[in-house]
Image (cartoon, rainbow, N blue to C red; front, side, top):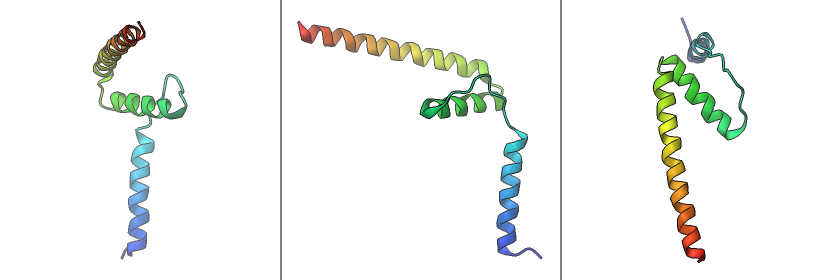
Length: 81
């Protein structure tokens, strides 16, 4: 019969085993906070087989943010005049 202590170890074993079996090979190692987010996003996209979709969404977000920064720079230049 399993005790509570053994059940905890068993649960941990199952959860870490599942992670090890689904490890994703990264094409590039990125470090720091950006690396954590990039790795998590890439791993999730690969596991869900939605890498193309995520790539399109990231590019759309990048374009959106670039436009916002461009507008902010223009506003700043107007204030300086």
